[in-house]
Length: 397
Image 1 (tube, rainbow, N blue to C red):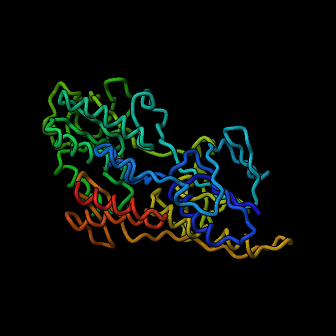
Image 2: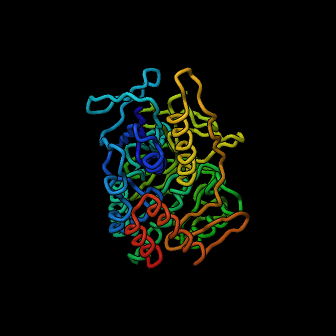
Image 3: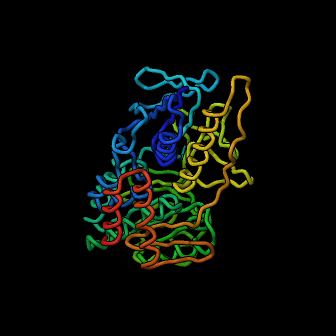
């Protein structure tokens, strides 16, 4: 039996390490990833301000995989009917069971000029590009615009505001969100605390604002708030009239974190899966690669914590199929996935906001919790040294 794990992000690496321990000895386990490393994605924004962290948040897969065969190549397509995966180098792999853990790409929604002029944040080179553009903005006290106020956009805006202070610059950092709240997928108390933390650090938050286009120097917007205002509260502090009031904003650095879409191997789509996380009897889709509705009918937000927990459920089900199925088409009962995370946490510059149950935390308590999240993941995947280094960097700044 051959089991394929396609992708080695949070879902893929978690799943592969579980299967290394639990698959029957006779089963072949193959991991396909387009890079030789695993990226601790939720710490990627830190590399904008702290480039030295690149070596901490990027983990060689050869250090953390043991039994699995690693193939470094890009998945071009998945033919589920034939149970075949086509690779960019022209090779192909057949499978008995497979898990698609390819993550997602940044969605630009066809907005004119946006993909050409905005930098996403998916890879380490993106962090370097954002840093370079922002440092240039610092030289002329310019403006940085971040599109999308989900957790990634919030964290980028917080890092840029902190970097501006460190450089003793006067850069306007503007965070745009089409919906009416920052972190719109999360509970209202968490949203309010996140917005307050951003504004305390000088980030101008503009919700109810849709990006309709981008040029090399301006972002075109439509806003439900009066032109030149921040949610109808008047002109943002430090927002001079010649800096793009009205239906456009001039920028020196433009970052886009406004949505996710499926990768090329999935035809740009994120297929829907339900509680068993299966696309068919032999193929699972895990993490951001899919739109997950859990066993209770609850839509699952795209997040690292959800991807890891989904992977643990898929590991149970793959092991059951690999161990207990027979040749007559009978298969064991699948373990259902239910979305259940203890809370949420986001870093904002050198601070953080967390929600555990109904309680929202800020200050030192939230910062300490944030430090343990990435370190906990690194420890789980077997890299204790990087876990210690990450904690040190989070707590010392």
